[in-house]
Amino acid sequence: MKTEIRYIELKTGYADNGPAWIGKVKLSKTGRTIYFNDKAFSKSLDRRYVGDIGNHFDIETGEIYWISCVKKDRTDRHWAGSGTITIQKSVVDDYLKTIGLEKLTSNYQIIDIPEIYPLERITALENKKINS
Image (tube, rainbow, N blue to C red):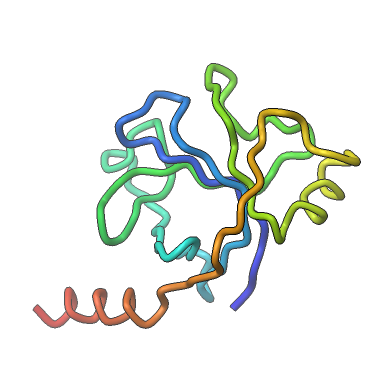
């Protein structure tokens, strides 16, 4: 599976200021499923489901998220949004290289985010849905 650095923001229950992370994700073969921080997100092609606020949903909870590649101009958050962005410690150097900076600004919080990708759990859940 391919890994990438992505921006992930929870939209359910928030406007444009929900919890946000920058971290290493795993992508399914098709790229429609993204795994991060013991969660799995499915890309929604149905705008009626995620509305205009997100582009993915948590397969287990149904919560809506905005997930995108990180932007070189650091405009990952919606222009009307605010709040600290949590960044996975192991991706800080690669992220700084991507955005062309030497150090992070104050609106980032660096933490260890375990690289837990629930492939087996999600596959079992999806197979259960298909069989029932």
